[in-house]
Image 1 (cartoon, rainbow, N blue to C red):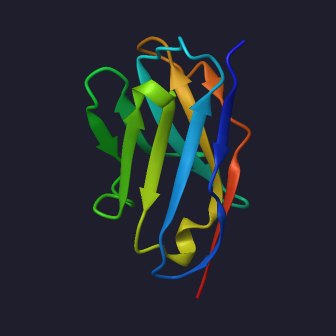
Image 2: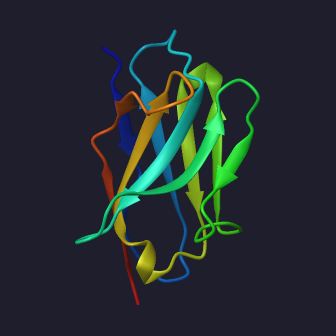
Length: 118
């Protein structure tokens, strides 16, 4: 069973940056897509960004477009989420996920907390 482990969360001030990392436990793991999601207190989980594992094609939620950048390092089995110009409304638990096919995400990490203060 593949495990996804996120890191890099923390407490920052508005306008600051953070980089989240997500590493898959198996070196031979080759998903179709890796994604980042987030869930704020009292809200449903929402999509943030995704990247195709082979070609590196990216897609972002409108709320983070221009501020967040998703990337991957295939050799390290790691996907990153660079978050710039953070806002208090970005406060949430951030989860990475892996999709093997064209439908649902099959594997999820445990989440990492990002808190942005004024």
